[in-house]
Amino acid sequence: MAWNYNTKVIREGRSWTDDNGTKHPTSWGSWSDEEKAEAGLVFTADPPPFDSRYYWDANTPKAIEDTPNVDEKGVAVVGADGMPTVTLGLKSTEIAKSKERAKGQLQNTDWYVIRFAEIGEEIPPSVLAERAEIRKEANELEAQIDACKTLDELIEAVTPKTEEGEL
Image (tube, rainbow, N blue to C red):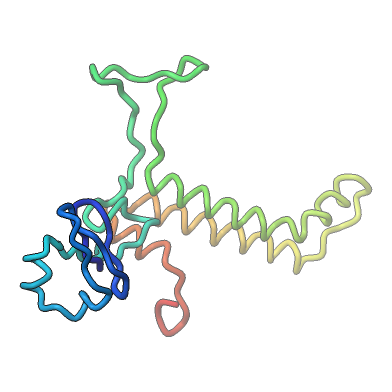
């Protein structure tokens, strides 16, 4: 929250000068709202908080579906490859995050797979089970994300859960 004079933010505890050259004291913050308004001050409330992962601002949610890019005439914008371009929606970005998480988790045991490919040494069953579980969880999350029709459903799907509920 801030008090403004014209386009300038006026900080409490500091003097300020108006357009008529009148210097106002550092104690102006103790004035009533009416006195502040008479001096030309306008109160501007802080914008409401919002989760920037899902909203552009407090009132504008981001698109959950991919959106084709079009020019001012409504014609599809094409990339260097000649294919139409899109702005990725939240579902695409959340699925990409899920894939990255799974990739990071699988990297810890990739050396078993490489060793098996190179010299044929068997991968321990516990490692195979762990890798299968990582892929299964990622695939399930991606299916949940893909099935979402609303932003609230998407947020619910991607919010980590504990046994007691949300983290």
